[in-house]
Length: 328
Ligand code: SF4
Figure 1 (cartoon, rainbow, N blue to C red):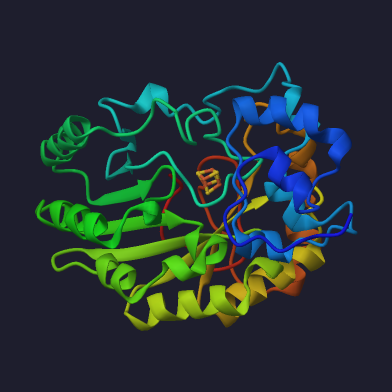
Figure 2: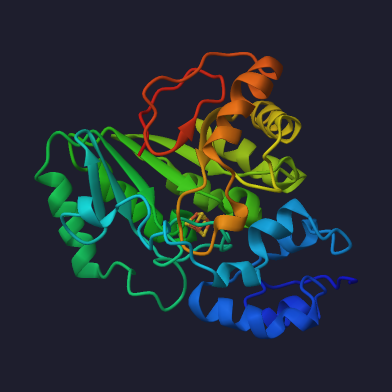
């Protein structure tokens, strides 16, 4: 396949074929995948894909595959059990001192392994209405033990800077909320979105902002992505990393080492490394727990010095730095 450059986000399988990012013969299957799971590949991510490489690690993350049509018996639409810990719409309260606030249901890109893939994407019923947003704020106000609010979704940086400023002010206006942590893929997937106004929106009086960057392969940390992260960190916002161990993307010690070193070069503290969750249609991207555990002592810790993290939640591996937060 040869590729043509995209200037807009690719959302339809036919567009992926037209840009040389998927074979025409796969189109009927890819249409079936796209009918169930959202597709979006930003120009920045599309430009990183080598269409001559059938195993390209960026393509594996964003280009849909017919393998997604197969669901394993062990897979679940809510693989980490958000629903059971959701007292009101938009809130997940799993640990006493922190809540997730799922503000938006859209992302710049849709990752083929996403553990919320049944809940994110255009047209999903998980968008937070104005009334539900106010209900979520009321819940946080009524729970003084909530010290940290984690904005997730969807991708919170899909909000406009103006709306994000309002949300940050609403949260910082709650006395017991001291930390606002934002999980995002935008600085790598669409770095131009990290404008001066967006960076300003991340800062708020009365609470400390942390930003967790989701990236899985060193190639995602392009010059533009690194500049976007530098703008955020230079504004005084500390960043940590969040990665998923993915078969054919980063499931070897050399790939992980390159990724972790790139994070450190960007002043981003390596922090989370998750096993793939049991999301539907993602078996082809998951590694075994045994392989992940073997990668840690045998590979990464020998290449990358640091301390293992204790008491991880979810299916996390430690990557050898000092860790502050328990899992979400
Ligand atoms: S950016 Fe995050 S929420 Fe959005 S599709 Fe990727 S993993 Fe899922």
